[in-house]
Figure (cartoon, rainbow, N blue to C red):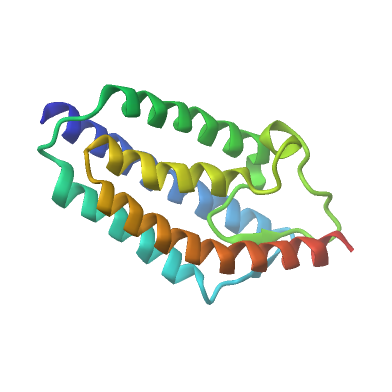
Length: 164
């Protein structure tokens, strides 16, 4: 139980810290002439992630944690940090593009167009599974995949437009 609560507290603190970082980066980008795309679907993404985390607190706070899946989740956190570091001040939770700026091609972006979404999708499945919540993991994975179809389509269009 102590490990479960500590893990959930760390994930919550991480997500809140990332929101602070994303808000700061968003303000800076917009001040430099950046443009936001896909603002209409953003509240749904926030609601999905908030529900996922709230559901984990509700269902997993007193469960044992599978150590192997915990290790996988911790590895995903290293990948998450790599993604954020690769984008630097351009990392946000929104779709914000700077017209005329080239796409990032360093870090994991050398290998994938949208590595952040791969990491998030894996996290949404792995963490609940580490608590034995397979149905929860599957349900939120399907909801996330549905949102990612909208999100990636919107982001791809925005990046193409910004690169012109």
